[in-house]
Length: 205
Length: 229
Image (cartoon, rainbow over all chains, first blue to last red; front, side):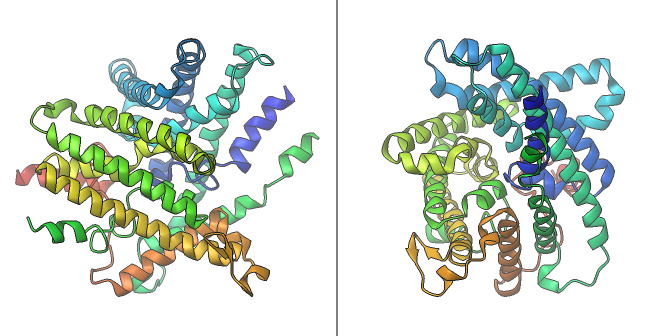
């Protein structure tokens, strides 16, 4: 149980997908201007990450490994994610239109978000099914890791949208306007996350 | 189209990383050392050239409505091939690039060039465009990696540099250094390259999903384009 908590907290703070692993930078820089769109995007990412892991982990364990098809991993995963996102969008549109209204615009954007493909590949790499771990334990670890990664993305997006609203309206040198100053701000935000290094292991040690 | 112009635009004028701002994730993640950066650049360039050639050859066959999934499948196929090549011939590089090698699939540069160039142009032009863009990508990665490795690790391609080796600024090779150097390089491009500073902050030109994207600037642009059509 403690191991699962460690996985969750490490994924949120230490191995933060955006700020220390550099996955999902595009939405981080593109959609973080306003708080509500940042929240919507991150909720959609959490949702898709969990769904994608729930589907790709069994595929890897029961389909690819027994048939020695691990080399097809990249193709299979990206196709599954793309199809899944489409399916989720259609279902949401039909049955939960209010949720579709708030998350819908972000869903197609997520297909090509490297954080989602990244989390599925890292899960099957880091928490594989082998002699010592059963399928369900690996699956639980993967799901917790996906949840933590999604929450970490959410945290980074919300924090950064606050930072960006503070930048706006300042007197910035001309060549730094726009993206450069945003990146410098991201550097400082990511610096603050370095402080979490080593904390989680020591809490539960 | 003038072949040389077509090739050279990817290097500076339309540099995919520093001007179009595509493919930021691998740029930031693999520029910790020069060797990694060159390896990543070479792998992405190879995938880009292959995918551009094939997509350009199939541009009349692929139905417009399902073009994005088709491109993704093609690109994923080439990425798998490159992954296996790297694993077989450069296992050390495979170790250090790790997750970022399969993630070339979702590199916006490759999908962006397919959407912006390869599906409208002849095979030869598309190949030249891919070569230029690939070298531009590698060049940007190389510049970032040089700065980060020299200051962060005191080495260049593994060779130690006197004085700096004893005064490492190790934060440069960590995550914050990546963002910082990238920001400085773009500011430098804005200042000295002959193009106006970007008003908007993010490249939407190559984004195949500009229409469905939540960002106002893109949505407005897509609407304008639709009206103009």
